[in-house]
Length: 240
Image (cartoon, rainbow, N blue to C red; front, side, top):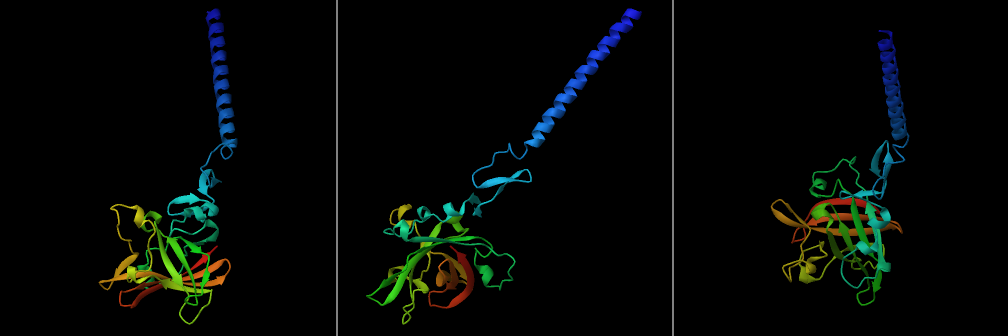
């Protein structure tokens, strides 16, 4: 009987030691996991660990986290051919959802989103005594598809700091048009205009640009009908 008691005591002792070893190992593993929670977590590019989770530390644009350098890279501009990357300047306009908007401002589908804009270096055309350029925008529409517009300084005001919508008559009444229409089927498909319906009329998005500083633009977007009636207006600031 004593022998059995001794054997049981040894079994209990061994079991206790195993439990202690398991508990010690578990605590050690948990402590290790806790200590490396932030250090061991791998995040995608342009993201970092914040409070134990990956968060975007770059620019979150149209659902994609990217760096500002990548976002505004001239390589992402697919406007009219002939422009050198050195001539293209990238700007970003961050959404300000705290603004109190007028009813017509909410007609712009990008009022609560970021906008990316590219501006070609402005040149002076001696033939018409006006400054000219063209710009491209990417908004939340069509998953960020780019639209572009030709720009001229106003007649009688050959100033490089003021540019407004201009396009040859072949594209009657449009402001911004798709940049990639010539690559999309069917062959020869006409450009897609950036439009919206207001008061049962088709209105075309047009840009009016004021250069406030070498790194800051003020862009007035207008929805205008084919007979030149302004139906809505919205202003955004862009930073280089």
